Amino acid sequence: MYIATLLTNPATPVLDAPTVEALRNAWCGGDVVWLNPDIAAEFALPATPDNRWQVWEDLQARGVDMAVQSAEGRRKRMLLADMDSTMIGQECIDELADEAGVGPYVADITARAMNGELDFEGALRARVALLKGLPETTIAKVLAERISFTPGGRELIATMKAHGAHAVLVSGGFTAFTTHVAQALGFDEHRANLLKMDGGLLTGTVAEPILGRAAKVAALEEITARLGITPEDVLAVGDGANDLGMLGRAGAGVALHAKPVVAAQCELRVNHGDLTALLYLQGYSVTDFVNM
Image: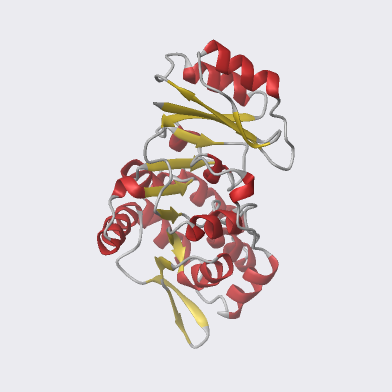
């Protein structure tokens, strides 16, 4: 048995009953269940439709996301989340670079690395080198003035944890940021890279080995083993090329507002919804949400 889920941005809900029912009828689906009126709905299917990606394309043009997945094991026991442009709306290194006066140059490197055009580790070393001499206090300034949380993040984590899940933030960014974000959003633990500092200034280097694509997969495997669960029990979410390893290894890998090259390699794609979309994909209704 399979489940088709349709959802949209809660801030601009455009999902209507005729759209859902027309698709249900075309695919000979089961009864429609509204997880959140005008925002998210689902129905059962006997098989995966052959034309699902064409339907997905058509719905994208209308501001609606759609996913088809196995009904079995949808609710996951662990959340493994990227930070930059996923749990927060920014790339932390780009914001630091802007403070250092090299913002556009670093942002271009970041974009190319996230698109998979550059080696992640090499690109990170090159960008961090441009931050040499930046006062350590700039990190607190960026956190206070430039960083915003992606809508739905607190509800996602609190709801999954209320149902027994473990939440992990794993980032190719820096512990100076993940410490704050993990605590603010309610993650159980976090992993990231360590920026080196000396005398209150950034040295322009990062501790080795760098946490990149392979390290995110390693985190998934190490933490699931420690918890006594399997990768199939994991919901992973990310947006960049360095997330592809963990997205492919997890039982459910969600490309959230991801780069096209990343989304193209993922079965679950959310381009319009916020982080609560990950709850709807697991079959949670809005009445199940734990609001923080």
